Image (cartoon, rainbow, N blue to C red; front, side, top):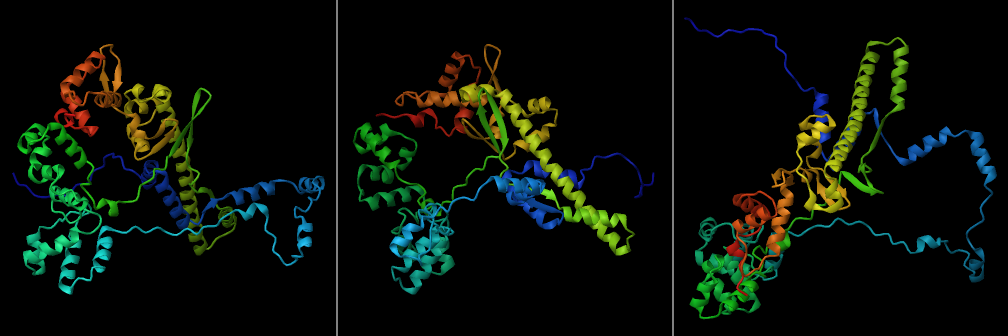
Length: 478
């Protein structure tokens, strides 16, 4: 049988996402702040789109009023009296003094100045320049500062620094000690142990019990072997516990005090307000530009349709017609996005009514498929609506995905949300006896007593998600 390559033409149906459908899905998924930038870019690219502001709306409403009604309103409203009491100015003889209304005297106009944050490297280099080091040590110090990570630790081994700069390891060690003496205290350390020792020495606590715990018993301290530490250092277990509490006040990442990022504020995309016994969903789109189609281009398009057009005018009309269709599609897509988001949030409120009434302990298990089935939409559409969006409720600001979680079966046959189980586990750990902390098996038994069927490994998984240490690391001796 001879085999050779051939070309064949065949027809088969296939689903292809059109550019407009891709744009609709993108606008549905992006949060409000990103959508604001997209709409501003569309306004710049499409001349048929224009932003509607309050001034334009008021002018349009004023045009709708008839001139007779405006004249009657002017006739009914007499001329208001002058609010300025000129007698005060005449008594003082201050005829050339500018009049400032009382409402403006207490207003302070502050100029908005952009705030710049100083990085860790900039802060350390500024301190180094005050030390007046010789050129060679200064060059080596600048290299070491550039080798620090965001936490303030030395990311490059000192041997590699010596090879890269051509300096001896002893000189690198001396310059590193200079950097370790800078602020914030603890920068330039090569590991956690050295970082903590630098901070204690800066406090003047060298050779104290906390310093000896880190210097001589660091491995036992990390594993919280307090009885073994007490036996070797010949002190009581209570003293070791107090020293460990003092060590816990030190900062393991001192560089973050300077190089930490600005806080990221959340802009809620939806607002839920309680009105009487009902919850009303509002879309937080006041920052979005309100779009409409420019009437000037529509009139141009109508005039060109009525008259005979040349080839150049046909191209112009086609261009305007294409931009007009694109503008109409964008406005329809924004409106459809608005209706879809409100519909999904209303469904969440219906399903999680007890959460809004009583709190997180009454959060029910909910899936995207359940919501999609109720609002007659695809599950992927609900997922795009909930992706990266937040809602402001009377109980706080939550991500939309917060309301979706798996369920755990109870002995009564009902389902409990996994978030509710996490909240119960956190409450049990917060209220436990710190000298005898509960194990994961004991927590699972307590949950069984409450009628919640949950395995020990599931408790361990939820505990790790809550960033809670195991029982042996939570134990305290005093």
